[in-house]
Image (cartoon, rainbow, N blue to C red; front, side, top):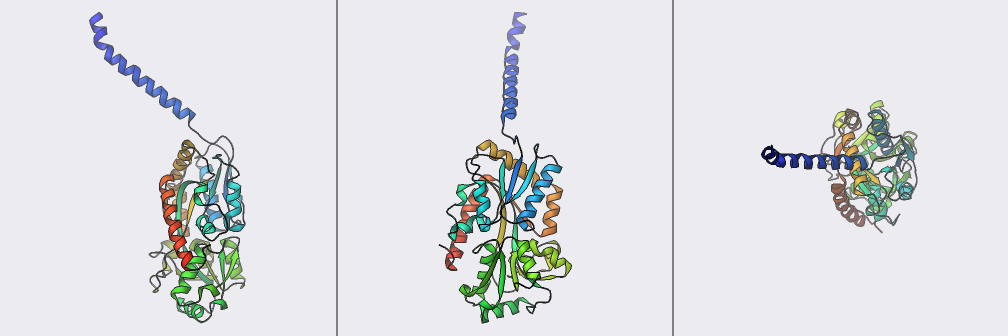
Length: 333
């Protein structure tokens, strides 16, 4: 009996060790961070724009699919091209119950001197997708083709009021300025009107208050499908899919303009690794849902998921690229 017990002791030891690690794993899983109260998804625009639509899709899918165990809601904080939303976000340092669906204005607002906050003053969580910039006119606009727009800009860049959202110097503004510069127009004479959201800018276009809107393509897609608006071109590297496949790229039209307004999810500064990991994983699962894939297909968005570390590196690269463009255009401070 003693011999048998002695021979089985290594086996018993392995079992004990295995039980210890299993118990430790359960303990870690039980103490890992997760939301304990309502989650706010902040957007820096009024209801109706592309960022707002993205936030509401995220909120709905999280609730419908029970990806989130607590309630959530979308909070609109329009103003300052996203600055008010970012200020509100960082009033909750270290609190992972607050997220922001942001945009490239996260970088351009700093480069153009509108805010001292940089992307490193927040916690990058995950990238969702890219929205390439479209150039849109009314269906009955005298600007029938891209050639008409280029000719008008070259003749007098101040003759055409152009609507953008949500701040001067953002990717919409940069796309317009790049076209004007390549057309041989005076960039500094561009007549730009800033609106609180993409929805507001397209409403102004429909009302005849501006003659052109430069906006992420998804914003104007419903009006294009209804026949109220026309796209002259889109700043994508290749033709988009779905309904936007009929829209030519600026590269096709002879202008090397590729620019996207990407949509990252940001959090307040000071989040810990467990909090970041929780949201990173949840958003990854969200991007794999049929609802989100259908949303991208319907709006012409291009999936571009990346996690926190990769997003941090990406923002650093984009910051350098945007600063170079805005400096060349005389918009950097």
